[in-house]
Image (cartoon, rainbow, N blue to C red):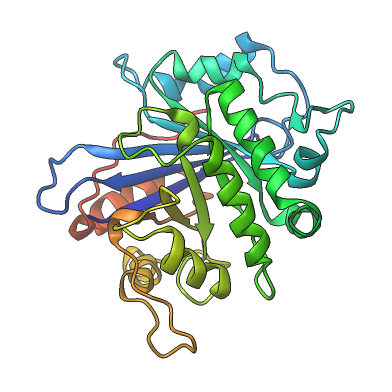
Amino acid sequence: MKSLLLALTNKRFLVLLTLLFISATALATPLQIYGAWHCSNDACTWGTVRDMADFDVKNHWMIDRGDGVPSVNLVVLSFVNPLKLLNKTNDAQTVNGVPIGMNSQVVSYFTSHNVRVMLSIGGITFVNDWDTALSTNPTQLGLNAAAVAKSLGVGIEIDYEENTSPNLTGMQSFITAYRSQLPYDATGVNAAARLTIDVGAGDRFLIDLDRKATSDWLTTANPVVDYANALVPSKQPTNASSAEGNWQEHVDGKSNFAPPILPLAPAKFTGSLTSPAGTILFRSVRISVRRWKTQPEATCKQ
C-alpha cells in the first residue's frame, strides 16, 4: 500500500487532497482515503458562521466533481485551538472551545454526500497552546475532544508540531482519554472513533513524536491511532521522486537514530505536497508517481 497527499492552494482557502490506498497490487484498486484539509475563507480560523449558499459556491466541487460523485471522501476542518478546547472557551469566534464556523451545518454539508469529516486540533500556530494544554490537564483535553467528536459526528486529527521537546506523556494521556470514550474501530463505521496524528514529511522532523507514534500508536498488531499524516516539508519537493524519498523514510525507519525509529507500515500513513500552481503539479504528480499506485482524478476549482 502506498499513499499520497496532494495540496492545492489559492488566495481564499487551503485544500489538501489525501490518497491512502488499500493495496499496491493494482492501479485499479479503489482509494481508501481521498480527502481535503479545509481552512475555510479566513486562513484556518473558522471564526465566522458561513453562509451556506456561499459555502456551496466555493466548495461544490468537493461534493460533486461534475458527474454527481464527490471529489473527496474526507474533509478535515482546520484548526481547533487545543487550549480553548481544554477550557471550553466561549468568545466571539468560539463556542465551547470549537470555532463557530465548525458547526453542524458545515459537517452535514459534507456528510450528507458521504464525505467523512474530521477536526484538526493544533497546527503550527498553536504549538505553545498544545504544550500548555498537555501540561495542564491532557486527560480532560482528550475527554473534551471525544465529546466534540460525538456531538458533531466527526473524527479528530492531532496536529502537534513541537519539534524539540514534545510532551509525550501528556499526549499519551490525551489519546488514552479519547480512546476511553471512543475505542479504536477497525471497521471505520464510527466516524467519531477516527483518530489520526501528524508526523514529519520524513523521519527527520518531529523525531520524538514520530518515534513514539510509530512504536506505540501506529502498530498494525495493536493500533491505537488510525493512521499518520506525513506533513509537507519546509521546501516543496521539485518532483515526485523527492517527495517519495521523504515518505520512504517512514517505511524504512531510522535504525541509525538513538533510540531508533521503527519502520511504519505504508498502510498506516499518508504523504503530502503543497501546490501554489494547483492543477499543474497535480497533473505532474499523476504522471510521475505511478509506481506509488496513485490515480488522482479531481482538479482544484474555486
